[in-house]
Image (tube, rainbow, N blue to C red; front, side, top):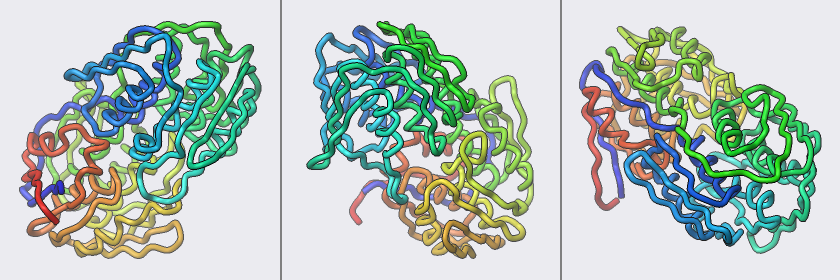
Amino acid sequence: MQRIVVHPNGPLDGRVRISGAKNSVLKLMAATVLAEGTFVLRNVPALDDVRAMADLLRSMGLTVDHSGETLTVVRPAEIDPVAPYELVERMRASIVVLGPLLARLGQARVALPGGDDFGPRPIDMHLQSLERLGATFTTAHGYIEGRADHLVGTRLFLDFPSVGATENALMAAVLAKGETVIENAAREPEIADLAAFLNRMGASILGAGSPTITIEGVDELSPVEHEVIPDRIEAATFLAALGVAGGEIVLEGARPDHMDMLMQKLGDMGVRTSSHPDGVWGMARGRLGSTDVSTLPYPGVATDYKPLLVSMLSVADGVGIVAENIFSGRFRYVDELVRMGADIRTEDHYAIVRGVEKLSGAPVRAHDIRAGAALVVAGLGAEGETVVADAHHIDRGYDRFVEKLQALGAEVERQSGEG
C-alpha cells in the first residue's frame, strides 16, 4: 500500500517543471489509431494512466515505447478493435478510443469505462454524437459494440460541453465524408491540443477552443510528431500548495493563459501570480482570505481545481461557499479534511467552508487523483503528521509528485507497507 507522509516545513521556495497534460496525452494516444505508421509524442509524463492507455493500445496490436518524456507509438496495418474490460476499468478516458476505431476500422468493441469514483458520468452524449455521424451501437455483457460502414458529416449540438464527447466526435469526424459542425463544444486547452495534433496529421479542423468546431472530413491521415501542452491541473496543485504553505515559486513551462479564472480566484484569496519568462510565478504571504467558488466548463473554474481550492479555503480567514456544477458526487474528500479539523458542511452540490487557523495532521485516504493531491496540500498547513493512504490514485495523474514538492522544500515522503 502506497502512502504519502507530510509534515509542515515552512514556506516553499524554488522551481519545478510542469509535466505534459495527462488529459491531453491520453487522447493523443487514442488518436494514433487513426493512421498507420510511427507517432512520436514529446513532453509525456510517467503516469499510471499513461501506462494504462499504453497497455490498451498494445492489446489492440500497436507498439508503444515510453522512454524519458518521449512516447513512440507504432500503428500497424491491422489492429484488433477491442478494448477489454480489464484495461478499460482502470481508466475512464479509455472510452475515447471509440471514435477513432469507428472512423478508421468501422467497428469497435469497448468495455464500459471505469476511472475515478466521484459519481455517475454517463456516456450517452458520446454515443448520440457518433450515432448522428452514422454509427450504430448495441450494449451487452458490459461492452459497447459499435459499427459504422460509412460516417457522414452532420451538425451536432451537445446538450453540455462534454470534453470526452467533443473528443470522440472530433476524432470520428476527421475521416467522415463531408462537413461536421460541433456546436456547444468543450473549449478546454486539451481540445485545442488534440485538434492541432489531428491537423498536423492532415485533418481539416477550424474553431477548436471555441464553442463551434468545424471539421471537413479527409480520406487519409498520416503519423506525426507532437509536443504535449503543459498540465494546468498540476500547475494549479503547486499553486494551491504555495497558498497553504506560503513562499515563492516558479512553475516552469506552465501556461498562464490556460488558467485565467483560477489565477483570478487565487488572487482573491491572496496568492499573487503572474506570467514569467519561464512559465508562471507565484507568491503567498500570511493567511489566505476566503472566496466563493463555482465549478463550470472551461474557461470557468475546472472541477479538478475544486478539491485543491477547498483545501485552501479550509485554512483561510472567513467563509467560502463552493458550488459543484459538473459532477454530483465530488465531495467525498470533505470527510477526510474534516478528520484533519476542517469546518466544512456539505448539502446537495454545495459546500460551506469556514476556515480554521490550523488543520491537524491525521491519517486520511485518497479517493481519487485530485482529492489525494488536495489532502497532501492540506497536510502542508497542518500541525503534526498527515498520512495520505491509497496514494496510487495520485500516481495516476502526477509525475514525481513527492519529488517535486521536496524540490520546493516541502517535508514529504512516500512509504510502502501494509494497511
